[in-house]
Every structure is written in structure tokens, then in C-alpha cells.
Length: 297
Image (cartoon, rainbow, N blue to C red):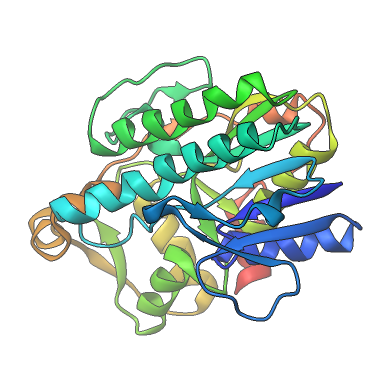
């Protein structure tokens, strides 16, 4: 297949492009600045500009573009978080319509915070609606709604509600690993909040199967089977790294002072189920923290 990818220069995008090409798919990339890939095409979503050559003969679009939620949420940055996800999706759709394209699939990233940024023992499935309305849930709802318009031009739409991605090449896990390496790893807040995660290899494979398997359609929680508490995650990370785990938690107010509203990502957490994606025949390579840490540490 020929696939158009946005966000291809990010952590997930780089790994996904490599995997798709290994499986003999042709990949076009929409980028803001060319870096040397032969199949790079420029776009400027803020000004509504896009190289239409990127859409030539494509079968699918994988929309990964989106500003990182790991920066302090000023009011101006909140707008960027929206525009980098939703405005870009609208631009893709308008271009597809202009070119009279028919897609086999439109696959969009989303966040596990769709359900709300709060702490609960309830195990959430894709059938659950928003449980706690807040900035991240509103962002995720708008993000997912922006994909709905592709229903008129795509055979299927897939949404990946993604948890924290574990990778040694970047992202939140690498930050936590570096903290632990200095022997200052500890639980955050009360430490009882749940921490959904997924190994980058499993996430990439989910995207690949979403392209290749026509039975995979709709919304999926991209999370591993084992969901630890923040305390258990940090403790296991320290032990597997051969480092100390501090018994004193990082106080909630410290995180709020340091990170502002963004701290709620770390201070709260629910549990999400991955049974729906497993029922499609998808097999997780890393279902438990022990398996993931053995690979990453």
C-alpha cells in the first residue's frame, strides 16, 4: 500500500515508517522542513498550505501530527495543542476532497485521557464515554471528532487512544529512566494513581495491523495488559535499573508548582482495557512491565 503519514519525524512516526517500509509499503511524509527523505512533502497547516503531490495514489493516511502535551500549558500553547491536531486533520480532509480521493483507511492518533484525567479503579473500555470533563478529555474528543468527516471518503476509520509510550529513544519513559539513574526515583503524589503504558513496538504493530487488517476499525485503547500504580511502576523501574527507590513521595504541590495544570497527567490515572484490540487477533509482545523493562533496561 501507499501510505501518507503526518508526524513522521516524531518518536512514534520514525519507528512506524521504518516498520512499514520493512513490510514493503510505500510511505509519503508531510513535513514542515525537509530532512532528506526522498518522499518528503512540505505543508504549513497554519497557513493552509500543502503539497498536493504527497497525495498521489495514496491508499491510507496515518495522522500522528500533534504538539507535545509535555510542555507547560499556557493559554497560547493550549491553542497550539488543538490546532496541531484538529486544524491539520481538516486540511488533510479538504485536500482529499479537492483531489477526489477515496481512501482504504484513515488512522488517527488519540489519547487515553479521552475518558478524563482523574483517578478511578474502574476499568474503562472503548464503549465508555467521557467520565470526567477536563482539558485533555476535551482535546481528545475534538481530536477524534476531526476524523469523523473522513467517513465520507474512507472505507474505515481507526482511532488509537494511546497511553504513555515506553521507548529508549525519547518520550516520558526516557525522562523517568534518567531520573531513576540519578537514584532519585520515587512515587509521585500519593502514588496510587494508575499508569497506562504501551511499548513502542506494540504500538507500531497496532498501526501496521490497522493498515493491513480490514477487520480493525473503530476506536481502540492502545495500552498494555498490566496497568500498575505510579508507585509500583517507579519502584519496578528503579529495581530493574539497579538503582535506589526513595520511600518519600514527591508531594503533589511540588508537581503543580513545577508543571502547572499539566501535572494532572502524572498526578491522576485510570485503568483502560485492551481486550477489544486483542479480540481482533492482535498479540502484544510486551504485556507486562517485566517484559517491557527486560527489553528497555
